[in-house]
Length: 175
Image (cartoon, rainbow, N blue to C red; front, side):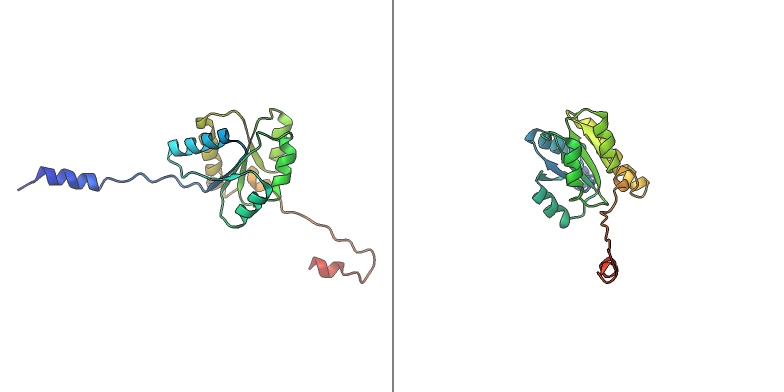
């Protein structure tokens, strides 16, 4: 005989659990307001929340050394010069990660400078929907274009070695 109660119980237990969208990201924050906005936006949209770390040079270099990151979100709202701080931080971040800078400096020169070093820029204040749309766009660009985009214009660090005369070891150091 067909038992409707058992059938309904089984269907409730086998309901699929919605998995979170996986975007491996990290937030280096300066203010609690930005941190809360990012976490709420990720949670509301069903994206795995980013790792949140204080925006400090030592913390940044320590964290990126031990983890695989797709998207790095750097908050520079308390910065006096967003371009200079982003340039300083760029040497601490891995070249394969896409970097989104959130700042309150509203100047086209800032956007151009950040694009030149391979960073995306979001002007603060932003809404949760703007943030999520931007993060998803960056993530899709990484997947669609084989990691090309502003994040891939970042170059490795170069050094120059000049030997003034023979026998100083310039060739040895270069090799």
